[in-house]
Image 1 (cartoon, rainbow, N blue to C red):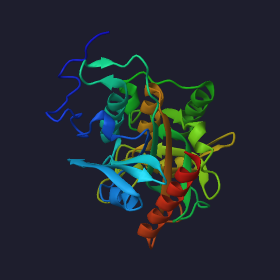
Image 2: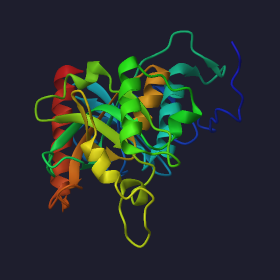
Image 3: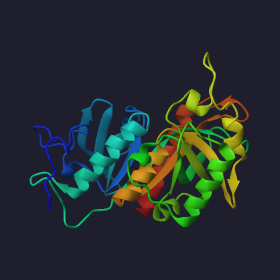
Image 4: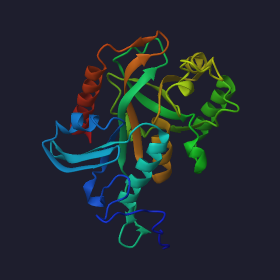
Length: 291
């Protein structure tokens, strides 16, 4: 088996992968990713014990036990470029021998769940509600640097989407479904729908401050899109990259989002901190009982 060069997989003097500063034994098989480094503590304050606390740049990690089950919470920072680092390095921790720099003969599957915030694209998905993503649809191009895999249904959704939204000259979209084994646990109390991932917060999400945008009808076209039972529920900046890379690497992925803004009715949550806290508690209750 070919050896992975030092320039391709960077391991520091602690024997940890470079950006995350984690060793293989320091992560659980279920990992929650959050954008905000401060949100890691909002999870780990509920742990019975904390085994690992690491921080390097924006990547903060706590691994511990809750109800006898091991859980890792990791901050990714914002955007698909950071997700490229997080997903590849988590997989390396699970599936590469750091001593020999070779891929393990038996591969491990991780559960990777984003718990974050996003904006609703439907009037009937109000602020402070929760969305579990059935699919991640990327406008960010990250997966186009790899070899994306899509089911027949995903290809049909994507074809319909590109025709409807008209992203020519801006993006080559891609789509990946959530892991059914995870999604089935997040039905009660959750809206479900396609989550669109954008490569930025302002222009790529149709916000206009001082700069005009190339596709001023973007919000309306996203909100109006439908394919069979599928519609776009929300958008943010990480889900499609997690789903796409997760599938290629053989991991189970899901995204849960608290809605802090509704772009259709132009509202922002008056207490987004409580909405996020409620989502954390709902996730942890499900984790304790079903994972």
